[in-house]
Length: 212
Image (cartoon, rainbow, N blue to C red; front, top):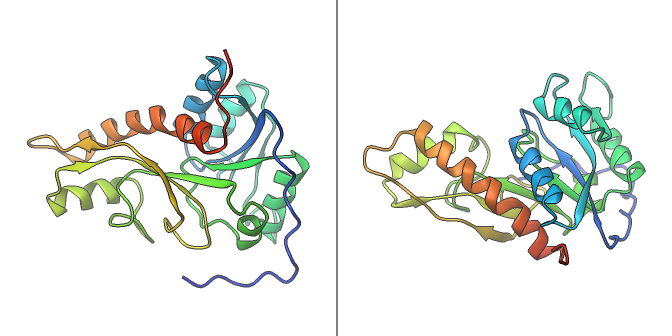
């Protein structure tokens, strides 16, 4: 997939700190954000959520961030003519080490990808690459999995690049298809698997396991 070339080279993201500073991007209710924060609270993930950004002003993720006194921002075409530049500036200002997409329903601006190359991750609700790409999100993924007649689905964590769902895969949890399964039932089981997988994949890849 082609993307527009940035007019200027993207500024470099800060070098990672001992305790990862996460910048979470979410468009909806933010259940994966809540699961990440819960892992941090339990002492399992050596990180802090430094910033939450949403392109949706009414996103539950923003409400959760405010309830936990986490810095947050609404960034969209309604707030900024150059949405990508504004997003990148928020991330840099918050000294974000790793960008975490958690139900973020937009293609990440190429300048953000460039600044955080190898340090931006996404979780997808199905096996990749077969059930990824443009238009493959949410219920569409679960319906496609069931229509394909495969025996397993499950969430996949991958690095983010300039195209949808094409970055290197970091982790996957198989979720078995059950007899008479529905997209709704499968979605619920996959979401539970996402909550257990995402923080572990981040901890493993970025060496952010909290020490006892």
